[in-house]
Every structure is written in C-alpha cells, then in structure tokens.
Image (cartoon, rainbow, N blue to C red; front, side, top):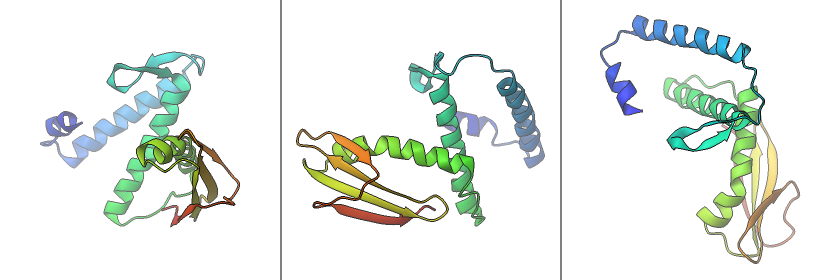
Amino acid sequence: MEMQVDVRRHHTAPEMTSELEYVLIRRARHLRNESRAPETMVRAPLGAEQSLEVAYTMRAFDLWVHEQDLRTTLGQPGNLDSPGAHITRDVLLSALPKVVAKDAGAPANSAVVLDVHGPVEFLRTVRVDGEGRGSIDGSPSLGPAVTLSMDWE
C-alpha cells in the first residue's frame, strides 16, 4: 500500500480527486456489466483464490471500515447503519469463532457474549467446545461467560 501512496505524494488535491472520479466511473461500469456467477473463483490478495461473492463482500467491508477510519480522523461520524455496516457486521461475526477460540485462546467449555448496541445491534454468543473449537449463535449464555458490551461505532 505504501508504494501507491508514495508515488502520489506530490499530487495536488484536484489531481487526486480527478483520479478517484475516473476510477469510480470505470469501476461502476465494470460492476454494472459483471456477468460472472458469484461462485466464480478470482484472484485474491496475496495470490490466493476466492469466490467473486467473497471478493465483493470483502471489498464492501474494506470500504466501510476505511470510511469509518476517515470519518473518525475528520470528526465526521456517520453512515453507521448503511448496507456496508451490515456487511461489516456479518464479516466480523463470521470470524468471531476463530478469533475467540484460537486467536484469543478462550478456554475449552467457555463462552463469550458480545452485546453490541447502536445503529447495528446484535447479541451473539461464541461458545468454545471441549476440543477448543468455536461456534456462534444468537442465544445468551447460561453458563460461565465473559460479556463484552460495546457501542457499534
């Protein structure tokens, strides 16, 4: 990423705006004319492959997250309940079982409850089974659990 930033460092704001507008026009045209099936395999970052559906989902996720980065930096909150926000919620929820069970190392037979409020609300429980595998569901935990309560923003 740094290389693309570095080569444009000397560009003026109008030049950057023009380039962005040109890319948006081309990309919108490309998306309107897309005829491949969602399950078509395409090149993913770092040389892997993924379905076209996953690729588009991840681009929507990236765009919304980086939009929020910019909004935070500029002190302009908003767009927290957009379609991109809902896609982001779904992407994050799909990753939670692995994040809780493997990455965070939650102990076997434990549960973590996520209670998120705001424009995109949800309550999900990540349960870690006896073998250390995580799963997620919408029911509150009846056993020992850690509850994380946070605002969507």
